[in-house]
Length: 418
Image 1 (tube, rainbow, N blue to C red):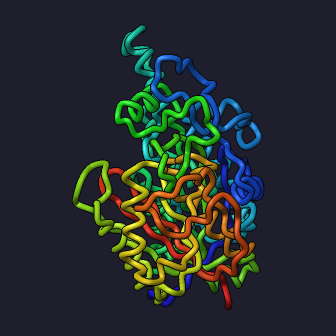
Image 2: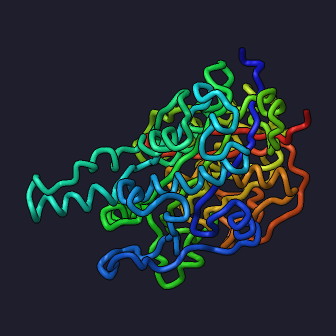
Image 3: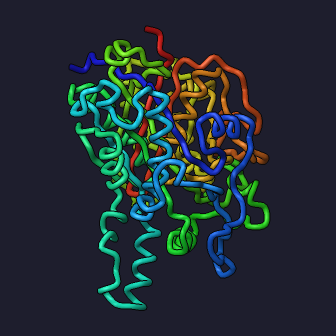
């Protein structure tokens, strides 16, 4: 059963640095930052006043306005990204019409936070006008699994269907669990990833109160600075990153273009603290090791790591320890970068963004840079590809994401070689 190989046949993205995979890759590989002042609401009283907002997003390019009103923004982003991925995979809008058995197509997508904008809007209505005025769509708009539910209906995907939530590791775990669903022969195709739309007052206030966010409000382009000694917190962003995973022989039979192979997945728990990673990097290291074991990959085989690299004091130094712990001597030579310097932190969408960055690194032979890296931190002493992209033959790439609650997720992608 586990000899079923799984490949990627489609990718799609909506982000603050591009509303397509090509635009996203052009931005992150050239170090263009999508972070700026928040424009959607008054932030004058907030400690942090910057974010990676998606500008000029038009959902009516994908669905009618009347239908869009019934969906929280995180679901709208998921549809936009998934449509791109499904089109690239040659599956269109209805898998049956593409000649695919619907019961063999599944969806695992979710959000780290869910419909926070919908919740706050309806709470305001409740407070002002009473319970009778709360929308009957509140619950189906706010719960995080509804991106999967809506995508399933949209594409007539009748196979495994769920949304799992592991905070900032949500998309990574969604892709990893989708991998196993295909391996155990519960599906031939899985649509997987994550989406987020939590740049709303309560979301910003909550992260600000934790003092997790950068307060470099006067210099937003340089606020997210992973692994830099002067980092002062992450910057919220939003969007969706979605992949189409497919069993290899199924993909070959229908003539799909194969972008890369998914060869390993690791999921572990720190059992340490609700927000801080393990100080020794143990949980994240075990996730990497688990992914390598499943893939049959040795540390020296990994050419590139897209690190979680949030630009927070604790994450970046503990993640550095995790990489050293898992890779040993090979950690000194592997190319690493955090693309959150350009995109900010997509929270539940981050693993989707960064898995796509890994795939593009494999396809292009280019390591995207960690921008805003100016002052080395003695506790972060690996090769983070500072400020400028680097050409490199990438056969194996690792994506690593860590979530509040001690959730660690690692994915290994490999160049497809038949």
